[in-house]
Length: 322
Image 1 (cartoon, rainbow, N blue to C red):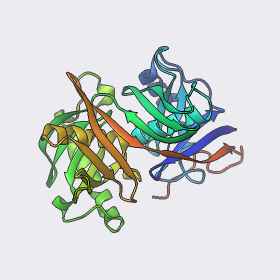
Image 2: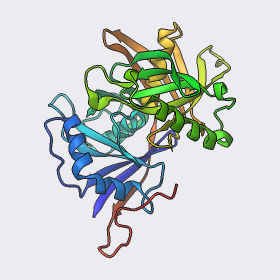
Image 3: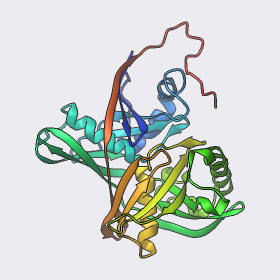
């Protein structure tokens, strides 16, 4: 029996495993990710695949932190495996930690929930008023531009790192826009972009090959500025093998901010998703390793679950129909 608490952040699901999974070994979170890939993939599939999940499910295992400087660690997973970063999940983990008493929180003010993830140490800055959570700021690892105008099949993309490597291009370059009616076409293009970039030198992480490879493809539309002059974009991030992020994608938003800042267009970004979810992002600091991006969002609990596997179940690992 495996227990979970489920959330959504700007529409994107996040399933936090709270019990029933054996300890995942490793010296740090990144090595625990490798151990989970080798020894706990059946649990991931059980919780992510149909009939308990779906083709666009997302979640995490909670693990010990790398050291006492963080409250806990997190191993993020989706239908195709384990990712290195997850901004929407970090926002949900901040809400979860405060609501479930995993950290000592203030009723009025800001509580920092420090979390070790495979890409490094991140913070969920939880804002509360009268004991009610009003919002969360995801403070990411350094983000930076990797390469510009890289050929990927019949299109050209910009590559940036935001805890994972993202390829970015305007949807208009394909004659499309970021709308649900174009989603299937955008998914198809994302697969072709990833295939074209497989093994490309620009997709290798400079210091740790475990972080290499294009994780997601971000298609974006430029929108009219907000009333206060803030930049607005709508995006859809297609990650793994055709999985669609319903949120504006937290780590992808950080990668977009690195690109915009590099163009001299920093400021604030109102980043909308394909379903209307909203993140607000800004560059908070510039370091030798890249820009520190802060992303504002909010997560909402959707349920608590206890999952079982009947020994006679003919689909012990579940399945994905698409």
